[in-house]
Length: 97
Image (cartoon, rainbow, N blue to C red; front, side, top):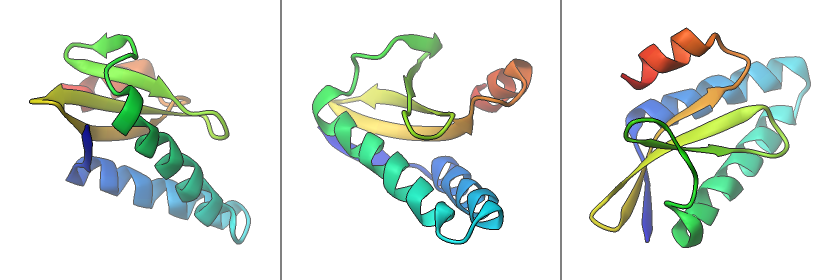
C-alpha cells in the first residue's frame, strides 16, 4: 500500500518537532525519525489497527506518546493526524471529526 501524509498530519509533525526540539536540541529530529518509521510500517501493516473514531484506525507509537490516525482508501493509507496521547480525549475526538 502507498502511504500519504495529509496536510493536517504534516502540521502535527511540525508541531511535535518544535515541542521536542525546545526540550532538548536534537530531540525534535529523533521524534520525526521515530514517527516516520512508524508511518512507513503502514505500507505493510496498514489496516490492522483498531478503529478508534470511525473511520480512523489508531496506531500507537513506541518511543513517544503519540498516536497515528489514518484511513484506508482504495488500497492507500491516508495519515490524517499524529496526535499527542496526553491531549484531552474530547479535543482528540473533535480534531478527528
